[in-house]
Length: 211
Image 1 (spheres, one colour):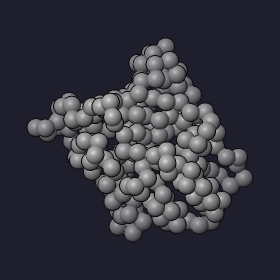
Image 2: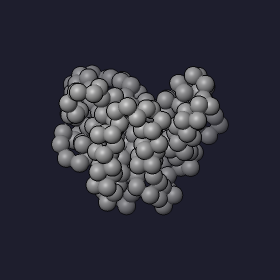
Image 3: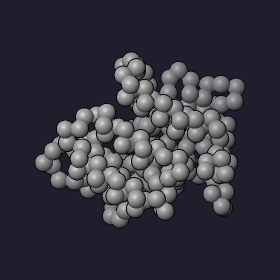
Image 4: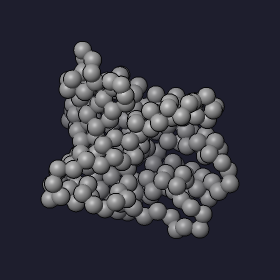
């Protein structure tokens, strides 16, 4: 899917395949603490915004979302996982999570989703501009800058999907389901900001009219 959109292989390896490898390594118990912390940098970019709240940067966890034709199926599976998640342990949840959230046939490789938990600077700015830049950095040298248009979802299937993803891992038993505003960051441009000969702010992808 991602190849047909002309997305750069290095970026997809970083944002998708290396995420999957890190999760599998965590499940197997082979990852050191240092490797786990580094792996999380692929899921937690700095979200840079501007607007009425001023120029702002906020670290937020983001993840892939299904394409429209798979969203209903994925929602049903996540609802079931949430109901069965209590007492199952981290490993059982992760295995289901991999099967649903990292299925290459299902996901949209040109967008990432996340939740707004703080309701402060990012929320104020994105509501005004619907723009953001995601800045990823994994030490010592790898970095990508992803300039995005941003959708806000406060109800509907995408909103439910992203809240369910959060609930599966973070909801305390007895608490009501999450109802946080959700963002969809749709890629407009991707830059390689890595400290390499091919990096230092080089544009490597731009959304076309058909993407």
